[in-house]
Amino acid sequence: MKDKRDTITKLFLNFLCGSIFITIFLLITKQSLRAPSYGYLGALYVGIFEMGITFVLWLKALKLSKTTAQVSNFIYLVPFLSLVVIHFSVGEKIFTSTIIGLVFIIAGILLQQHSLNIIHHKQ
Image (cartoon, rainbow, N blue to C red; front, side, top):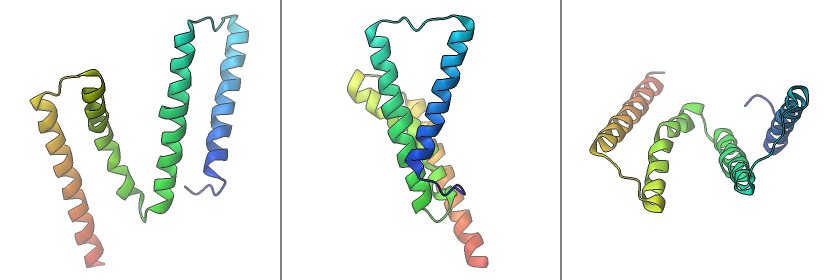
């Protein structure tokens, strides 16, 4: 967050450097990237949606929030949101233990927010 360069530029440079390192590794080890076309499509999907757009949105959220703690709590909710998406798109079963875990996570987030509010009011 202290780095004031453009968010998208920073991410692009990180992915570019990673690609260069992978290429160097492949050249040194003489490995190839032969894979079925659906493998490349999957890699493209992960790169764009799971690594690209989500990181940009996450960094924008961090810049817009007053504290990183406000945004950091969403990390704990993302697996459950993913599970809901997977449930409706693929039919993954959601177990009672998952719901109980979600209740504990939400309770922990609410307790943390309440504790932060008490600390801020005392200052």
